[in-house]
Length: 123
Image (tube, rainbow, N blue to C red; front, top):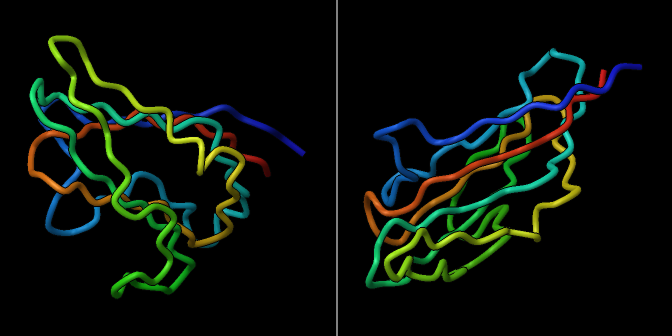
């Protein structure tokens, strides 16, 4: 058994979409891994307004429809107020993603939210 720490984040000009849920991580089908979410930080770059966030844990072969697979609904990420507004989303800490499962996010406002995700991959 092997345990490897991994991380992923928004690219330099990439944001969590407010139209189509952004995939934060997917446990590739057939990879024979179990992913365990360690920490998810969401960053709001808007200095004036909070932005809502919705998170989904989508099982292999599933798709989001309405509130299907929703973890958070209308979670408010505070405004940055001159410094970066960062929220530690504790609802996902310890979450397991099996083959084909994914963690996805949807922002309430375009071009405002970024993410930093740490997780463990166990084979």
